[in-house]
Image (cartoon, rainbow over all chains, first blue to last red; front, side):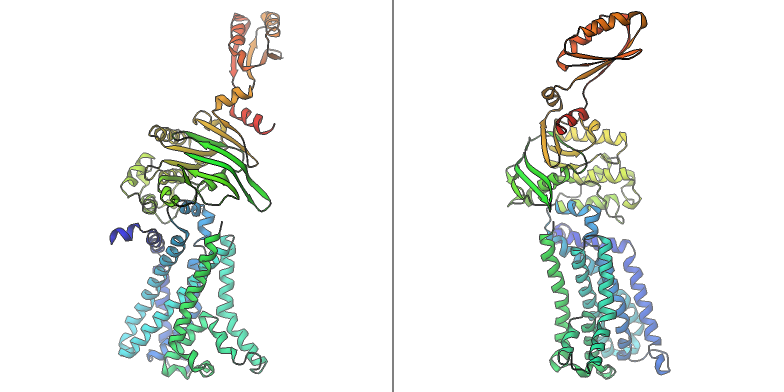
Length: 277
Length: 300
C-alpha cells in the first residue's frame, strides 16, 4: 500500500501539489480566513433584524452561503488557474512529460492534490467554526452544517475543475489569470443579475420556464439552491425557492448537477490536454 | 542507439525541423550545435516524444518514439530542458525525491547525487533560494537519476560557472565510460568542441553536417593561420621565404605578419619559419575554430 502511495505517478503528483500548498501556508491562511469570516457572519448575520449573536443552524447556514459563493470560487480559481500553464511557462511541463508519466496522470494528479488542499482548507476553516457553533446547533443542526460543508467542497471542486480547464486552454499565466477572474465575475457577480434583469424586463416572458434550468448552468446558483432547498426554515426566505419545479428542487438532483460541474470541465480539460502540443 | 530518418516538424508556417537523418551511436557524446532558433530544442523534443513529427521515423534503442514500449524506455532516459525552473517551496532533496518517485528509480541515490554535484550543503534549503547555477546543477542531478542509458540535455551548461562547466563535462565523460549515450545541444561552440565525440551542425531546421570535429575540419580544409613578429634586420629574408611557401597567403604589417595556410602544409610551414631563427620574434598558430567550421558549413 505504501509502495502504491509513494510510487504511483498520479499520487506522486497529487502529493507534491498538496505538500507545496501546505508548505506555502496557503491552506493555513485561507482556512483561517474562512473560519474568521464564518464566525463573524454567524454572530452578526442577523444584525439586519436588529439582533446579534448566534442563531439557529438554518439562519447561520443561509448567511454563510453568501460568503461561500463569493469566496470559495475565487479561492478555487486562484488555486488552479496556473496548474498546467505555469508548468509550461517554467519549462517543467516538458520535463514531467518526458518521464514515464501519462498526461492523464499529470492532469488528474494535479486535480487530486489541489482538490485535497482545497478540501483541507474548507474542512479546517468551517470545521473550526462548526466546533465553536456546535453547541448552539444541536444534532440536526450539525448534520445540516455538515451538508453545507460538503456542498461547499463540491462547489470548490467545480471551480477547481473550471480552473484546470482554463489552465489547459490559456497560452500564458497572465491570460489564465485574466480568464479566471473574468469567469468569477461572470458566474458569481453578473450571471444572476443578467437573468433577473431579463426576467423583470420581459415580465417573465423571455425566459419563462427555462429560468430554473438556466440557474443550473451556474455552479454557484446550484450551490445556493442546494443549500436553500435542503433547509426547511430557510426555504421561505428565498423567493427563488418558489420558482423551482419539484424535480429540480430535489437536493439529490442538485448534488448530481454539481458533480457534473466537476466532471464536465475536467473531462474537457483532459480532452484538450491530451492533444495539446 | 538513436535513429532519425526524414524527420520533419513545422509549427504553422515555420518549418522548425526539415528532413533530418541522424544516427547517434551508443556510448558517444553527441553535440547538436546551432544558433538560437536553429531547431535544436525542437529536434530534442521530437526525440523525447514530447511533440509528434509531421513525417519521418524516430527510434531509440530500436523502440519507436511514442510507440508501444516507449513509456518503459523513458525510465532510462534522463532529460534536462533549457531554462527549467523547479518548485520554489520544495527543497533540493525533495525535488529530487519527487522526480525519483515519478521515474520509479528509488530515492536512495538522491542525497548522493546532490553530494556529487556540490549541492549537499543546500539539500534541505528551498529551491527559491538557489542561484541560477545551483538550479542548473539540480536539473542535471534529476537527469542523472536512475543511471540513465540516454541523456538528453538542452543547453546544459547555461548558468554554470567555469568550475561547474568543468565538473559537468567530467561527469559526462564518466557516464560515457560506463556506456551511456549523451546528446546535448549548445550554441557555445568553444565550450563544446573538445568535449564531444561528434557534432551535428544545424541551421534553419536542416542538419548541415555530422561528424567528429577534426574530421569535419579536414573535410572542409579550413585554413589555419600563423601569426609572427618580424625583426627589422631580418624582414626582407622572412618575406622572401614566406612568399615561396606553397599553399600560403601572407598578410604583412609593419612589425607582424600572418600566413593563411592549407592545413595539410602545417608542418612544412612551421619548419620553414623555425629555420629563420632570430629573424622572427615569436609565433602563434591558430587552428580553425568550431565557429569557423560552423560558419563554413552553414553560410555556404
